[in-house]
Image 1 (cartoon, rainbow, N blue to C red):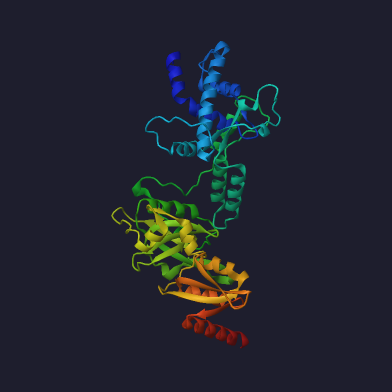
Image 2 (image 1 turned 180 degrees about the vertical axis):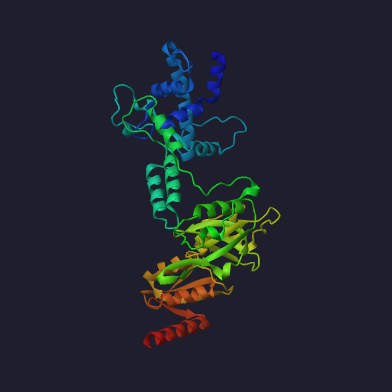
Length: 439
């Protein structure tokens, strides 16, 4: 390539070239100088004589200034994203306000100028810390550790799925080099090797619309959800169905006693197929749920994804029904699902088969309020009781069955007060339980 054309190419792409060097060769403990960045750019993106377009001899200082200017621009974008106060940036006309956020997401992080505290082991008398830069990924080292710990402890993921997620999370965390290694291509080689070594999942492969894979009962029958897991396949198929507004057909499973005291996982209702309108997925207390309406019942429910034994996305003609008003008005904002609002309404993700909703009141000690929040969310009315150690709590428009279950389970701590029907039901249930235990 002619030198003029090559320099034009560099002008158009130098930002991403610089990011690629810092992303694979730096972290907070290993910031890099402008000289290092320039030399690494030459090693990666130029093949030819020493007098290359990235500067050698008299051109070296000129290229360093260009790189410094680009680094300053990249650092400013990062500062804008995290809300730091910087000198006003003059944006070209028509550039959207969300550009820094988009760039941050696309790059997977931001470029940062090193602080004095990051200069451990660096020769301070050679260059000031302002000449050192590093790439800060969206996922920090502690983020990666936290996520991987959660993945490893998930008992619904197979070993293959855990290996797949852990490896990809580590790559998303960025730096693969080793501190102190200064070989020119060592960091890049390590990064490239890690990328090529990433494990693949044998059962994943969403392709064209007509090739959406089906999860069949034959793939899950006789296995507990923790054995030979297909959790990630279910999630990917369900995500496709939600995004493309398609109906699905599922068969649910139940735990059942097997031979010789073993535990089995079998089809519910003899493998009855249920057609659903899927609207969203949510994670709560270590479980994944699908929020959907059953075509036959038209009731909003949440389904444990690990309990799905077979799953099929229906054809394009079988479009999902519109989001029900109750779900849309309370848990969607601008057609985007708000999981926090849904979890607040269903903290334990319990579903009652009846549609009867009631207000109920109970008396309890003040230190038991946490139990009510765990079960029914933060939307509670709390009033003082005659005794300073007690309070009265009213919960609004909750399932009768869930209210009854809560009061029975926590009968050592709570006293039901209203409505009379519920109070008598709880009392009768507890009396009958005492009789059975006494026999």
